[in-house]
Structures are given as C-alpha cells and as structure tokens.
Length: 291
Image 1 (tube, rainbow, N blue to C red):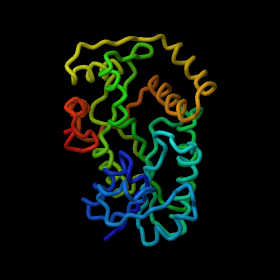
Image 2 (image 1 turned 120 degrees about the vertical axis):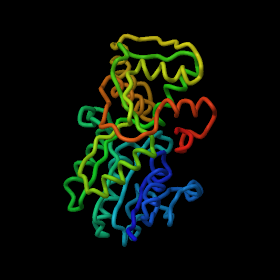
Image 3 (image 1 turned 180 degrees about the horizontal axis):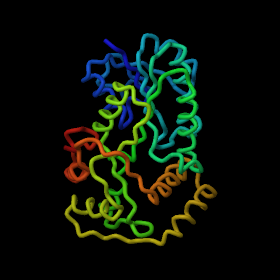
C-alpha cells in the first residue's frame, strides 16, 4: 500500500484530499496543528507539528511515497505572514520530503498567480512553486480558479440584501468544489502530471454569480455596480491603513475579481446546489451538501 502525507489536512480542501486518497486505497497520513480538529478526517494516521518549525517535521515523512500540500493562510489570526506559511512552511515540507526520499510532491497553487506577483499571497505561493520545480523531487502543481467555499462571501452579501460589484461584472470564474478538486489532484499525481489549471464545470460572470446567490434564497437581485477606479483606489489604500490580516485577503480578492479566473473544467458538483445547501442550512463542506 502506498503512503500519502497530506499537509493542510484540516482545511477546506485538505479534508477532501484525505477522503479521496483513502477511497483510492492509499495509507493516509494527515499533518495537523491541533489534533482536536482531526476527528473527522479520513486518515489512517494523524501527526501533529507546526510546519513553520522545520525541526518539528523531522522523520514524519519517512516511508511516504507522496506529499500533497494544501497548506496556506486563509485567514490570518496568529500573526504569521504569507511568506511564513505559503512559502516558508511549504519549503520546510519540501526539504523534509527531499531528506525522506519521497518520490513526488504535489502543491495546490492558485490560477494565474504569475499575473498577481504584486500581491503578497500570490507572490509567496509562486516563490514556493519556483523552489518546488527546482527540487530533485518529481512535482505536480494544481492551480485552481477558486473554491466553492470562496463563493460564501457572495452568498453572504445576498443574504444581507445587496451585492456590490466593481466595473461591468462581466469577468468570469469557474470555482470548483473541494471533492471535485481532490479528485483532480489525485488523478494528476497518479498520472504524474506536472501542472493542471483546474476549475469547476460551470463558468459564471460576477453578475451571474450574484443572480445565482439571490435565486438560492428566493429574493429579487439587488446589485450595485461601483466604478472600477474605486477598486484600484481601494487596492492602493488598504495596505496603508489596515493590518495584513485584513488587506492581504482583500488585495487578492480585489485583484482576482478583475481577471478571467477560468481553469480547465473538471467535476460534476454545481455551485447552484452549493448555494441551495447554504440556504437550507446544510453543511456546505460536505459533498452531500452540494450535490
């Protein structure tokens, strides 16, 4: 039986990665910071460490055939930066994988990061990918357009009664459910694919996303379009007046929303069903809650 070591296992995607590799017959080792958060993971072994501390990882990958990292900051709550986690923590994982003789290292990146290198989140991820591709290990990079979980912000605005968009609202995105993306990752590592740009089965303009969210809660759409210059002004001002835990995610969102974030279509799970699950109060992180 092959062994996969999954970092970021308790995050939105990590839970689906554990389940997918387990379903395929792998022995799953899940890396967590807090073992109390690992109770629901489909893992054969739980290991506890701080990936930001290289010494805490020693020996943990011995015997592993594959490392999959979905490790990265989603919401900054502990003072760590993107450079600390999205870059350095993954570097620590990579160096330990090299020492342990792991065959392949797979990393979950972000679509079109090369066009967002002025954004700290994207820059840290891109810097790690450069190091990964320079490594002696075989590598797989999966660059998703966005997660269904990211679309929760759109749904929350709809519930509040109004969705605010910048510009014309015509740029598109095809977000992907975590279960579908986990399958993409596993297929890519099985096939030893070097790079996959991945999105979900349906692409939406920002206006269509807004309409879909309002439809799920049964309300007439109320959409306000703001001049795109306000987005640009906000991007320039936020880093000066807010801490990184606030402006970091906002910078990424405000930059990505002005781009075509459409990856190769994969999967079968639909965003409309995900919004319906949110409206019904179901668990949106479960496959059943979005299918």
